[in-house]
Length: 196
Image 1 (tube, rainbow, N blue to C red):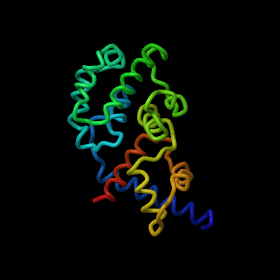
Image 2: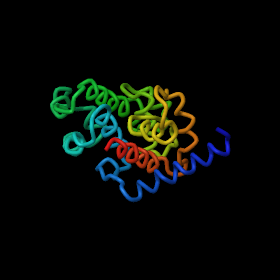
Image 3: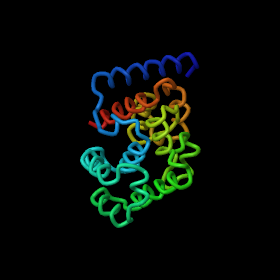
Image 4: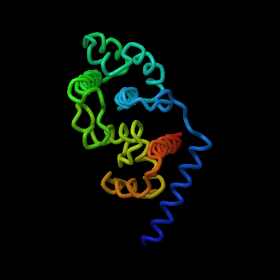
């Protein structure tokens, strides 16, 4: 594929994703906030868990632990109690450890880049990228399930066993650097639609 053809494909992809999002965007509580703490909570909750399960649990958790400070100071047993039913309790432990580090090691301020976020427990490539994009409008390059599905559908419709390494250049090429937060929401919604 020539670079001109690739550019046209990328432009058409971007336009299709934005058009779909304008007409069909999903509304979640965590998409209505820019609070870094709330975004960290939602992104860790959403790891390997469907949005429908998190919609109810997210506000309940925030009501009990509204800030990094509140979570850092809570007894672990209370945190695990609030986490019950979400699954993968180690995520709750990571979340509390992140809160402790933010409060005690980072003067209450969450790091803003994926590289810094990856130093926190339980945050890999995808979660650190998503937090940076959603909380700080950082044009991170990351892949999660729905994003992967969107790129595979558009750029590799007949291929199997496509590796993430093959997708990263496309994600980097198409990311909206002016509005990465909305772009990634749009990608997630477009990819989610492809499962129906």
